[in-house]
Structure formats: structure tokens, C-alpha cells
Length: 296
Figure 1: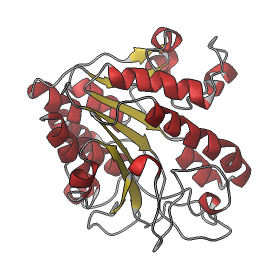
Figure 2 (figure 1 turned 135 degrees about the vertical axis):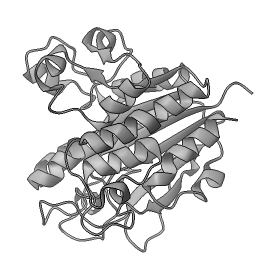
Figure 3 (figure 1 turned 180 degrees about the horizontal axis):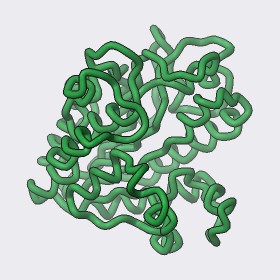
Figure 4 (figure 1 turned 90 degrees about the horizontal axis):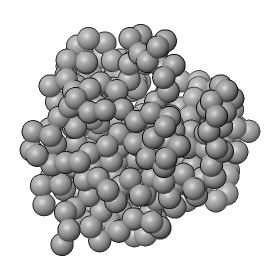
């Protein structure tokens, strides 16, 4: 068998809520495999396995992005280290955790390569936002001294932007083509096939939740679901494991602007999915699961 591969598809702010009028996941059609509800069994496409996953990590308060993402990308319980959940972007203590434990660094040290953060960056980000707004994923890439994918990579099909259609880039005056969800999914699938580990990050779901924008959710969620389905259709699930997870809930309850205390969906497709599902309880289990998959 060829070397095993893993894709981690990270969706910010996707929790498991209940069926009610405030949950767009319960009121929008054609969003399989995103719609999951408390105390209900989910029948997943491509024989996926759903694991409701604890994002609170034993720490009081609402889960937040900086600490949750640090936990996902390192296997270290970041809120426990801080004593609280950290919103927004990692502080120095979390940056230190990532610098020492980044999944990319762990794989590099194990000589499991090549690996990729598939998201495209803009030149403007490094000129204006880099020092102040450095995400956990950015820190994780830097820890392994990897290069960032930029707009020329996106134009060549070697990267995907966080909104995957490129509409945000066009609105900012950057000359890139508008892609359909299916076209973006095919591009990401090609990247998965040429790397041992691929990370893709999508965070518009969290933004929709904070803005409590049901109309935006109606437009966006079907496209997001189609993009995910297209990736699944275009990768080899005999040799590849597709893991989808989130850092905290949000979009599943638009009655509030805040994150929720709900568990998040970790969905596993492909190679060793049942075996891996048994070992995931909270967000700190994601990185160890990926390492175990790639060690053969």
C-alpha cells in the first residue's frame, strides 16, 4: 500500500445543536455532512463516523478559538495550561506551546513529509496583520519552518483561500478567478493526494455565527457542504483519512452572538476511521490520532 495520507478539514465555530428555528443546520437543505443534532443518530455519506467531541476540555467557560485551535494543532490541552479559554489569537504562552508541539513540527521530526497548510495567504496579510493577528495555524506552520502558500500558488491550483470561492479576494481588488465549491474541492483534493498531511482551515462559519446572519448561512452552508463532498469524491479513501473537526460551537445557535458549550462534530472518513473514532474524546486527541495514522 502507498504511504497513508490524512487531511484535517478544520471548520471554525461548528457545534452540535438541537433542531430548532435558531439552528440553520436544521433549516437548510443540501448541507450533508454538516447537519448533526444532539441525541440523534447521523447517517453519514461515504460511511463516515461521527464523534461528538468535547471542546470545553475540563475548563469552565465558553470554548474559544485561540485555545481550542492550539489544542487541536498540538495535542496539548491549552485551556488547562492557561487556566481559562483564550479568544481570538494565541498569546505568547500559547505561541510557545505551538512552537514546541506543532503537528507540523512533530511530523517533521518523525520524517513524515511532505506536509501542507493548504490555505493561501495574501501579501497584504504579512504587511499589515502578521504581527498582531497571527493565528494558531500560522504559528504551527512557522514552528516547522514551512513556507506559506501565496496568491500565485492559488492561481496555479496549489492552494485554496479560506472562503474557497475567492469572492473575498475579488472584493479586495485581487485579480483571481471566482471558483465554484466543486472546483475548489477538486483543487484541495489534488493537494491531499500529493502530501502526507494536509490542513485546510475555514472560519466563515464562526463569523456567520457571531453576526447571527441566517441569510448568509443559507447562502454559504450548501456551498461549504458541496466543497467537502467534492473532496471526498476525489480522494482515495482506501489510503487516506479525512478528519473534519471544529474548535467550538457557534453557528448552530444564531439566537446568541456567543460561542456555545455544545460538543463539536469530529467526523472521520476513510482509512482506519472506526479505530481512530474510538480514541477521540476531546480536542486534545486530534493530533495524536493524526500522528498514529501517518506512522502506518
